[in-house]
Image 1 (cartoon, rainbow, N blue to C red):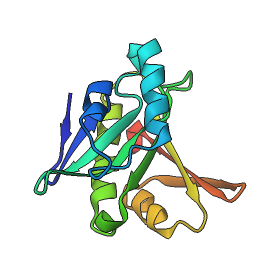
Image 2: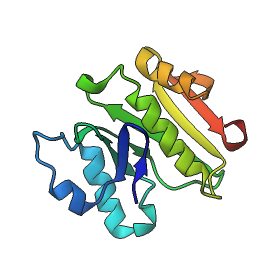
Image 3: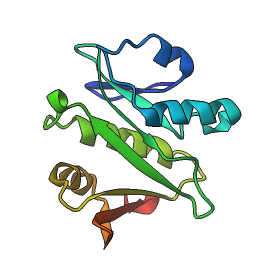
Length: 152
C-alpha cells in the first residue's frame, strides 16, 4: 500500500522498510519503533500508525506522518506529522496530511480526524488551517483541531 500526491509518496512503516533506511537517510525516531512493536502484536494497526513521506523527485525521506492508533469508539483518529527542516515551508506537510486524511475518510469507521499542536507552532497552525480543520479548544498550551468527514 502506498499513497501518492503530485510530489510525494507516502508509505506505511514496516520492519522491512525501516531496516533498509540508514541514519544518513532519515532519523528513525522512537515513536516509529514503538509503533512497529505494537504492529507485531496487532497487524490490524497497519495503516493506523506511522507512514514515511518521500519526495518523489529526489527520492528522499522528508518526514513522517500518521495516526495515533485505529479509529476509536467515536469513529475518530488523531493525525500527527513532522517534516525535516530542509523540506519545511514548501507545502509538503499540507499535501501529505491532506492525502492521509482523504485515505482515512475512505474507511467506514472514520467520521472525524483530530490533531493538536502547540499554541506557538505557527507552521502547524498554518497547515491545519489550510486543511480547513476547525480549532476547537486550547488546553495545556495546545490547540485542538478537528475535521469531520461531512465537512471535507
